[in-house]
Image (cartoon, rainbow, N blue to C red; front, top):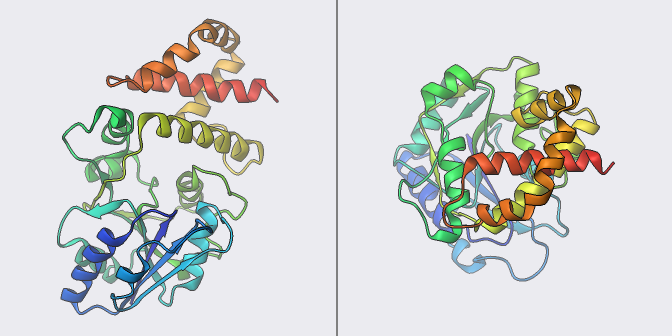
Length: 296
Protein backbone atom coordinates (compact mmCIF):
# COMPACT_ATOMS: atom_id res chain seq x y z
CA UNK A 1 0.00 0.00 0.00
CA UNK A 2 2.71 2.54 0.96
CA UNK A 3 6.42 3.02 0.32
CA UNK A 4 8.18 5.24 2.85
CA UNK A 5 11.23 6.83 1.24
CA UNK A 6 14.02 8.44 3.26
CA UNK A 7 16.96 10.19 1.65
CA UNK A 8 20.12 10.81 3.61
CA UNK A 9 23.69 11.97 3.14
CA UNK A 10 25.73 9.91 5.64
CA UNK A 11 23.49 11.13 8.48
CA UNK A 12 21.77 8.92 11.09
CA UNK A 13 18.30 7.62 10.25
CA UNK A 14 17.56 5.25 13.13
CA UNK A 15 15.26 7.58 15.10
CA UNK A 16 12.84 8.26 12.26
CA UNK A 17 12.90 4.64 11.09
CA UNK A 18 12.07 3.43 14.60
CA UNK A 19 9.11 5.82 14.98
CA UNK A 20 7.70 5.11 11.51
CA UNK A 21 8.10 1.36 12.00
CA UNK A 22 6.28 1.47 15.35
CA UNK A 23 3.32 3.35 13.90
CA UNK A 24 3.10 1.11 10.83
CA UNK A 25 3.16 -2.06 12.92
CA UNK A 26 0.24 -0.85 15.04
CA UNK A 27 -1.78 -0.14 11.90
CA UNK A 28 -1.17 -3.59 10.41
CA UNK A 29 -0.15 -1.78 7.24
CA UNK A 30 1.44 -3.19 4.09
CA UNK A 31 4.49 -1.02 3.76
CA UNK A 32 8.16 -0.82 2.93
CA UNK A 33 10.88 1.57 4.06
CA UNK A 34 13.56 2.47 1.52
CA UNK A 35 16.64 4.47 2.52
CA UNK A 36 19.08 5.85 -0.03
CA UNK A 37 22.39 7.24 1.25
CA UNK A 38 23.80 9.67 -1.30
CA UNK A 39 27.26 9.71 0.27
CA UNK A 40 29.20 7.13 -1.78
CA UNK A 41 32.20 6.79 0.56
CA UNK A 42 32.73 5.14 3.91
CA UNK A 43 30.66 2.60 5.79
CA UNK A 44 26.91 2.27 5.63
CA UNK A 45 25.30 4.36 8.35
CA UNK A 46 23.85 2.26 11.19
CA UNK A 47 23.63 -0.78 8.91
CA UNK A 48 23.62 -3.33 11.72
CA UNK A 49 20.84 -1.61 13.68
CA UNK A 50 18.72 -1.04 10.59
CA UNK A 51 18.97 -4.66 9.49
CA UNK A 52 16.72 -5.64 12.41
CA UNK A 53 13.71 -3.83 10.94
CA UNK A 54 11.39 -5.82 8.65
CA UNK A 55 10.37 -4.44 5.26
CA UNK A 56 13.43 -2.16 5.14
CA UNK A 57 15.99 -1.77 2.38
CA UNK A 58 19.04 0.45 2.75
CA UNK A 59 21.66 1.18 0.13
CA UNK A 60 24.46 3.59 -0.69
CA UNK A 61 24.57 5.18 -4.12
CA UNK A 62 27.78 4.48 -6.03
CA UNK A 63 28.11 8.18 -6.83
CA UNK A 64 26.54 11.36 -5.50
CA UNK A 65 23.25 11.75 -7.39
CA UNK A 66 22.08 15.03 -5.89
CA UNK A 67 18.87 15.53 -3.95
CA UNK A 68 16.43 15.38 -6.89
CA UNK A 69 17.90 12.29 -8.52
CA UNK A 70 18.20 10.57 -5.16
CA UNK A 71 14.44 11.10 -4.78
CA UNK A 72 13.83 9.80 -8.31
CA UNK A 73 15.84 6.66 -7.54
CA UNK A 74 13.81 6.02 -4.40
CA UNK A 75 10.51 6.59 -6.22
CA UNK A 76 11.46 4.33 -9.12
CA UNK A 77 12.51 1.57 -6.71
CA UNK A 78 9.31 1.78 -4.64
CA UNK A 79 6.91 -1.16 -4.96
CA UNK A 80 3.76 0.81 -4.24
CA UNK A 81 2.15 3.73 -6.08
CA UNK A 82 1.80 5.83 -2.95
CA UNK A 83 5.15 7.08 -1.69
CA UNK A 84 5.82 9.10 1.45
CA UNK A 85 8.93 11.27 1.15
CA UNK A 86 10.72 12.08 4.40
CA UNK A 87 14.05 13.66 5.25
CA UNK A 88 16.35 11.84 7.63
CA UNK A 89 16.42 14.71 10.15
CA UNK A 90 12.71 14.96 10.94
CA UNK A 91 10.41 13.18 13.39
CA UNK A 92 6.60 12.89 13.39
CA UNK A 93 5.04 15.30 15.87
CA UNK A 94 2.15 12.96 16.72
CA UNK A 95 1.49 9.25 17.12
CA UNK A 96 -1.26 9.34 14.48
CA UNK A 97 1.17 10.53 11.79
CA UNK A 98 0.90 7.44 9.61
CA UNK A 99 -2.84 7.00 10.10
CA UNK A 100 -3.38 10.60 8.92
CA UNK A 101 -1.61 9.81 5.68
CA UNK A 102 -3.65 6.62 5.28
CA UNK A 103 -6.79 8.77 5.38
CA UNK A 104 -5.31 10.94 2.61
CA UNK A 105 -4.78 7.79 0.55
CA UNK A 106 -8.38 6.72 1.20
CA UNK A 107 -9.49 10.14 -0.07
CA UNK A 108 -7.40 9.55 -3.22
CA UNK A 109 -5.21 12.62 -2.77
CA UNK A 110 -2.63 12.83 -5.55
CA UNK A 111 -0.41 14.99 -3.32
CA UNK A 112 -0.66 15.52 0.44
CA UNK A 113 1.60 17.77 2.49
CA UNK A 114 1.63 17.43 6.26
CA UNK A 115 3.68 20.50 7.10
CA UNK A 116 6.85 21.22 9.03
CA UNK A 117 7.42 22.57 12.52
CA UNK A 118 10.28 23.44 14.86
CA UNK A 119 10.86 23.28 18.59
CA UNK A 120 9.56 26.39 20.38
CA UNK A 121 12.68 26.65 22.52
CA UNK A 122 15.58 28.56 21.01
CA UNK A 123 18.54 26.25 20.25
CA UNK A 124 22.20 26.78 21.06
CA UNK A 125 23.67 30.07 19.87
CA UNK A 126 25.43 28.57 16.85
CA UNK A 127 22.11 27.31 15.37
CA UNK A 128 19.83 30.31 15.88
CA UNK A 129 19.66 31.45 12.23
CA UNK A 130 18.46 28.07 10.95
CA UNK A 131 15.92 27.75 13.76
CA UNK A 132 14.66 31.31 13.33
CA UNK A 133 14.22 30.91 9.58
CA UNK A 134 12.43 27.59 9.96
CA UNK A 135 10.23 28.81 12.80
CA UNK A 136 9.17 32.03 11.05
CA UNK A 137 9.17 31.03 7.36
CA UNK A 138 8.74 27.26 6.97
CA UNK A 139 6.41 26.36 9.85
CA UNK A 140 3.10 27.50 8.37
CA UNK A 141 -0.19 26.43 10.05
CA UNK A 142 -2.43 24.29 7.88
CA UNK A 143 -5.08 27.03 7.60
CA UNK A 144 -2.48 29.46 6.22
CA UNK A 145 -1.14 26.87 3.78
CA UNK A 146 -4.63 26.14 2.45
CA UNK A 147 -5.44 29.81 1.96
CA UNK A 148 -2.19 31.43 0.82
CA UNK A 149 0.22 28.65 -0.17
CA UNK A 150 -2.07 26.02 -1.66
CA UNK A 151 0.45 24.72 -4.22
CA UNK A 152 3.56 25.01 -2.04
CA UNK A 153 5.03 21.83 -0.58
CA UNK A 154 8.26 20.61 1.00
CA UNK A 155 9.65 17.20 0.13
CA UNK A 156 10.67 16.64 3.76
CA UNK A 157 7.11 15.43 4.52
CA UNK A 158 5.20 14.74 1.33
CA UNK A 159 2.84 12.01 0.12
CA UNK A 160 2.63 11.46 -3.65
CA UNK A 161 0.63 9.10 -5.82
CA UNK A 162 3.43 8.45 -8.30
CA UNK A 163 1.02 6.89 -10.83
CA UNK A 164 -0.48 10.37 -11.32
CA UNK A 165 2.79 11.84 -12.60
CA UNK A 166 5.09 11.29 -15.53
CA UNK A 167 8.40 9.78 -14.45
CA UNK A 168 10.87 11.01 -13.36
CA UNK A 169 8.92 13.25 -11.03
CA UNK A 170 11.79 15.53 -10.02
CA UNK A 171 14.05 17.51 -12.36
CA UNK A 172 16.94 15.23 -13.40
CA UNK A 173 19.13 18.22 -14.31
CA UNK A 174 18.89 19.62 -10.79
CA UNK A 175 22.04 18.19 -9.22
CA UNK A 176 23.01 21.01 -6.86
CA UNK A 177 21.45 21.88 -3.51
CA UNK A 178 18.12 23.66 -3.24
CA UNK A 179 14.74 24.42 -4.79
CA UNK A 180 13.61 20.93 -5.82
CA UNK A 181 10.52 21.71 -3.71
CA UNK A 182 9.89 24.88 -5.70
CA UNK A 183 10.23 23.23 -9.12
CA UNK A 184 7.75 20.53 -8.10
CA UNK A 185 5.37 23.12 -6.59
CA UNK A 186 5.48 25.13 -9.82
CA UNK A 187 4.55 21.99 -11.76
CA UNK A 188 1.58 21.41 -9.45
CA UNK A 189 0.46 24.99 -10.01
CA UNK A 190 0.89 24.81 -13.80
CA UNK A 191 -1.13 21.59 -13.97
CA UNK A 192 -3.65 22.75 -11.35
CA UNK A 193 -3.08 19.63 -9.25
CA UNK A 194 -4.73 20.01 -5.87
CA UNK A 195 -2.59 19.59 -2.78
CA UNK A 196 -4.31 18.06 0.25
CA UNK A 197 -2.90 20.17 3.09
CA UNK A 198 -2.94 18.23 6.35
CA UNK A 199 -2.27 19.16 9.96
CA UNK A 200 0.26 16.34 10.20
CA UNK A 201 3.67 17.93 10.71
CA UNK A 202 7.12 16.59 11.24
CA UNK A 203 9.57 18.34 13.57
CA UNK A 204 12.82 19.37 11.94
CA UNK A 205 15.42 18.19 14.44
CA UNK A 206 18.62 18.41 12.38
CA UNK A 207 19.55 22.07 12.70
CA UNK A 208 22.74 23.16 10.96
CA UNK A 209 24.97 25.83 12.43
CA UNK A 210 24.26 29.35 11.21
CA UNK A 211 27.49 29.30 9.21
CA UNK A 212 26.57 26.01 7.52
CA UNK A 213 23.06 27.24 6.79
CA UNK A 214 24.37 30.46 5.27
CA UNK A 215 26.72 28.51 3.00
CA UNK A 216 23.89 26.19 1.93
CA UNK A 217 21.69 29.23 1.27
CA UNK A 218 24.36 30.65 -1.03
CA UNK A 219 24.52 27.34 -2.91
CA UNK A 220 20.73 27.31 -3.19
CA UNK A 221 20.75 30.83 -4.64
CA UNK A 222 23.16 29.66 -7.34
CA UNK A 223 20.68 26.87 -8.06
CA UNK A 224 17.83 29.39 -8.24
CA UNK A 225 19.74 31.47 -10.77
CA UNK A 226 20.48 28.37 -12.87
CA UNK A 227 16.80 27.38 -12.85
CA UNK A 228 15.79 30.84 -14.05
CA UNK A 229 18.53 30.86 -16.70
CA UNK A 230 17.32 27.48 -17.97
CA UNK A 231 13.71 28.74 -17.87
CA UNK A 232 12.69 25.89 -15.58
CA UNK A 233 10.91 28.47 -13.46
CA UNK A 234 9.78 32.03 -14.13
CA UNK A 235 11.50 35.18 -12.90
CA UNK A 236 8.53 35.68 -10.56
CA UNK A 237 8.67 32.21 -9.00
CA UNK A 238 10.05 33.48 -5.68
CA UNK A 239 9.65 36.79 -3.82
CA UNK A 240 13.44 37.18 -3.97
CA UNK A 241 13.77 36.79 -7.74
CA UNK A 242 10.66 38.90 -8.30
CA UNK A 243 12.18 41.74 -6.26
CA UNK A 244 15.52 41.43 -8.04
CA UNK A 245 14.02 41.77 -11.52
CA UNK A 246 11.77 44.62 -10.39
CA UNK A 247 14.77 46.50 -8.98
CA UNK A 248 16.71 45.81 -12.14
CA UNK A 249 13.94 47.23 -14.30
CA UNK A 250 13.73 50.42 -12.21
CA UNK A 251 17.51 50.85 -12.04
CA UNK A 252 17.57 50.81 -8.24
CA UNK A 253 19.63 47.62 -8.25
CA UNK A 254 22.92 49.39 -8.95
CA UNK A 255 22.40 51.76 -6.01
CA UNK A 256 21.52 48.82 -3.76
CA UNK A 257 24.72 46.96 -4.65
CA UNK A 258 26.89 50.05 -4.23
CA UNK A 259 25.36 50.68 -0.80
CA UNK A 260 25.78 47.08 0.36
CA UNK A 261 29.26 46.35 -0.99
CA UNK A 262 31.18 47.81 1.99
CA UNK A 263 28.97 45.99 4.51
CA UNK A 264 28.61 42.46 3.11
CA UNK A 265 31.13 40.89 5.51
CA UNK A 266 29.66 42.75 8.48
CA UNK A 267 26.17 41.50 7.59
CA UNK A 268 27.49 37.96 7.26
CA UNK A 269 29.09 38.17 10.71
CA UNK A 270 25.79 39.41 12.12
CA UNK A 271 23.92 36.47 10.59
CA UNK A 272 26.15 33.89 12.29
CA UNK A 273 25.91 35.69 15.64
CA UNK A 274 23.63 34.58 18.47
CA UNK A 275 21.00 37.24 17.60
CA UNK A 276 20.60 37.24 13.81
CA UNK A 277 17.86 39.19 12.05
CA UNK A 278 15.72 37.74 9.27
CA UNK A 279 15.53 41.22 7.77
CA UNK A 280 19.30 41.23 7.25
CA UNK A 281 19.14 37.63 6.09
CA UNK A 282 16.75 38.72 3.33
CA UNK A 283 18.98 41.67 2.46
CA UNK A 284 22.03 39.42 2.26
CA UNK A 285 20.19 36.91 0.06
CA UNK A 286 19.13 39.66 -2.34
CA UNK A 287 22.68 41.02 -2.44
CA UNK A 288 24.24 37.59 -3.05
CA UNK A 289 21.66 36.64 -5.67
CA UNK A 290 22.10 39.97 -7.47
CA UNK A 291 25.87 39.60 -7.56
CA UNK A 292 25.54 36.28 -9.40
CA UNK A 293 23.78 38.02 -12.27
CA UNK A 294 26.37 40.79 -12.26
CA UNK A 295 29.12 38.15 -12.55
CA UNK A 296 27.73 36.66 -15.78
